[in-house]
Image 1 (tube, rainbow, N blue to C red):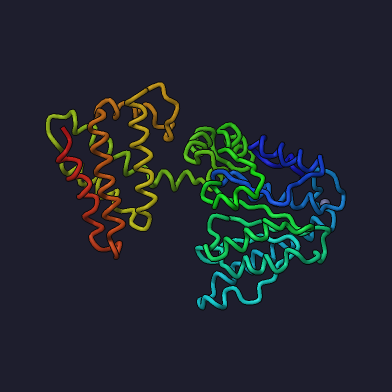
Image 2 (cartoon, helix red, strand yellow):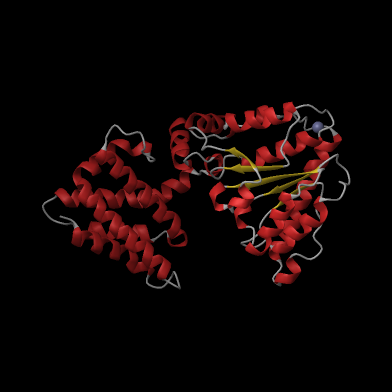
Length: 361
Ligand SMILES: [Zn+2]
């Protein structure tokens, strides 16, 4: 237990630990950086350290307050899940109760005005069970515009025994007035080595699968943890077949249309997951571009396919790759426009092919 269990972002961890060691933790902090790198986790570690019975610059995870903190967080999670189910908007924020350690998260798309009103009402009162009160405002960029000024007022007159930790992906999505009131701790995407290490400990993925997972995750620990190699393969295989056919077509003497349509149909078969399917398509095309421009570049996501990607990139050429991208963009627009995803879905693959085929050199 303790800060040593936090993976990645050593700079963020160090600056938080230094604040704690010096006994000068700012009343308002802003944790910003990409998704899935542990901003909220570190915020909660800091919160626990502020209340842990052992004192000092780390938390124990075992004392009664550390355990109490976990119970508060679990209760708040349940409460949030229940509120998100409520249909009538007014009732969603009825009877909000904030614990001494409280995560405030968007109930709908937004953190609602009533959530911030409750925060303000309670921030100046004495904590119930802990020596301090800590409010973690997650997805702070979603605070409803009606409530931003309320929060600003609180930050301008900081309460003595309450700490605020705002968490968001991009600090510049917050109003400058809010941003300037907070001490910022920046987070970076996690390094590939760290992610691969973590997967080696936590999962049964093979070494090549771990390498692929780290690339697909793009620095997000949460994404890497959720990576499912079978599912990824299921999405990718139709693209691999499709690209094989398209790359062959650009050099072959004539088009095997049956092959083209078969591979297009296979693409359209992942109908419940078109968004995911298109995402994989984009990642393959961006790999092709990278390899075409600079074969030595290390930016390839689908690292396990590198030799085949190099071959396709050479055969398609930049122009061919661009045309594939244009076809994919069109497929994407069709998908968005399609009110009923079932309708016309079968024609989508064919549409991609005809778009691409008509434009290929
Ligand atoms: Zn403790």
